[in-house]
Amino acid sequence: MDHIMQAKTDAPAAGQAAAPKSALRRAAPLVAIAVAAILGAVFLRDVLSFDALAQNREALEAFRDAHYLATAAVFIVAYVAIVAFSLPGATIATLTGGFLFGVFPGTLFNVLAATLGAAVIFLAARWGLGAKLAQKMEAGDGVVSRIKAGIDENQWSMLFLIRLVPAVPFFVANLVPALVGVPLRRFVISTFFGIIPGGLVYTSVGAGLGEIFARGEKPDLGIIFEPQILLPILGLCALAALPIVIKALRGRKGI
Image (cartoon, rainbow, N blue to C red; front, side, top):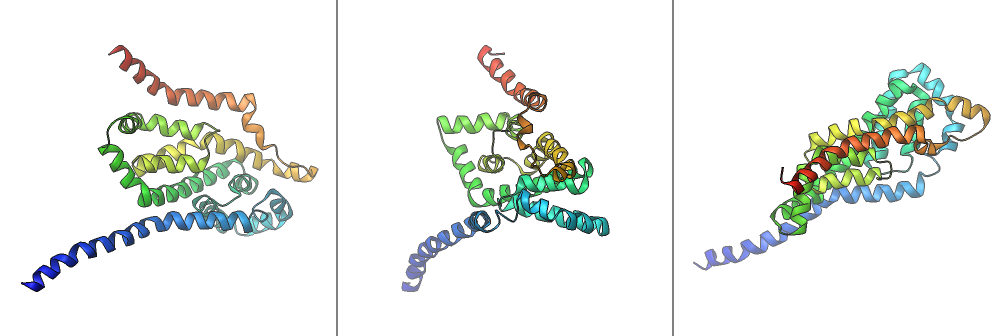
């Protein structure tokens, strides 16, 4: 009888000990990404830079001409790592894609790699925090629950909107969907198509780097805010936001 009582006493203690370990395992991917981001900011800032690209452009072009498929594969893997671990140089990587592979297939390579890297962050965040947070938001009452319900009702529109708006940091657009329980498939599709406009602009700039290198200049990365570029992107933002506006108006009018 004493053995049975002792086993019952030990069971909760074992469960309590297992809980912190489980929490640590869930947080490990996010911690690894954070550590890699800090180390990358310290040690890779000068490596993943425009000056480094300019200095190594001839070697990169020679390797691409000799080993095109290998260059494409290495480029995509490197770009995925840059995005997944939030390393500095994502914009330089996009320019490099255009420089090495042209507008097409450079845009495809850039968008594919960025989407895969974003999916890694999304899964790490959902594994570490998102699932439990989404459950708490669904079970909660008041403002938090209403915010979660509003996002759920307009997931496609919201996902495309945060991808299209240039002011939304890419890292933030990867984390927020994970924290509100967005399905992986929906996240990947909206990311892939949502980043195409911006990716196309920067890849096009990268495709013209040969002339910029020849003049000893640096590319104008603010081109995305030029009216001829920004206005069409804002138009796409308006289209993405339209279903949200229509639902809001219908809700007010009781339609």
